[in-house]
Image 1: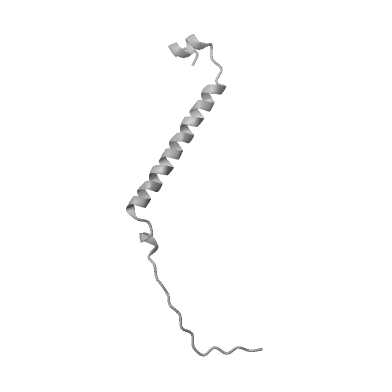
Image 2: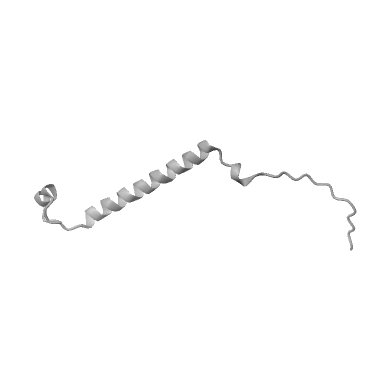
Amino acid sequence: MDVNISDIVSTVHVVDGDVLLAPQTLAKIVQVVLQAVHEQKEHGMRVQAEVRISGGVHDEQTGEGR
């Protein structure tokens, strides 16, 4: 079966992709990402501290054994 369409009516909305994010929204995204990066870095430092072999509490407190 063939279908013949003679007229089409359509509404097209054009949006500028650069203005989809309000400055406040972008600032919030940046803040959340920076916080996540900071938390990852701190976690990595805690993991390193947990697996590091030291000479005991005295060495850790005085900074020896590094």
